[in-house]
Image (cartoon, rainbow, N blue to C red):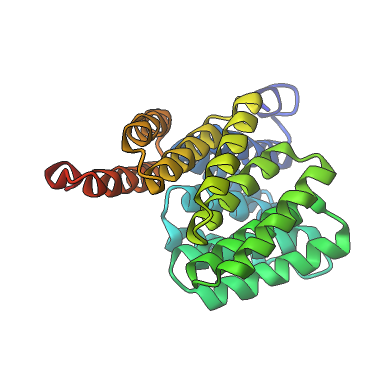
Length: 277
């Protein structure tokens, strides 16, 4: 991507703009959200000045929205996703469905659960038509999360379990690991604490195989929470501190704050109220 930005294609503004947007995606996946934002904004600016195609502009807004979303800045994420959606139609069903998935996650972050479910269902239907099993499994995981937060744990269990099966069949290990992490959370809500512990352990093993730091952090936090629910607070504390150490290396402060909440729950459960605060 750097070669496209500064090499022989540097004179082609469209290529440069698209490369910067793609670079934003890479930064985001590495956990460098501020760099992802800067790269997407620069790419979008170039595409706008050079008269880029609507699909390219929509992709730029999508990646910019994703970076804001991963920072927990949901209003800015929503603003950019809606800008992206306004530039395309359902004829580009893949991009349309992926943006609907992102909007669903954003609405979930804003606490608008019904609207989130609508967007995610739209995403799932579109991706099913395309046979895009990996992205469809991601949309199903997100829909399962919405059901979980609505207290509809049986629906959440069905959605996330199916997402795991789809991801496994389609050989999307990262999505499969994400499905396992969320399945463990739902199992905990259903009181299936030993199942939750086993599922969290499988998720962490898979995340470590993938060398995916964000997934390692999330699955470690899940495993720590599973031990907390079983009353094994010493093991839980070690794991939750490990998860926090993993995420502190990135600039994802929103995720870091969630892990601090998990530690707070642990200390409160153990009777250490001062530490919990």
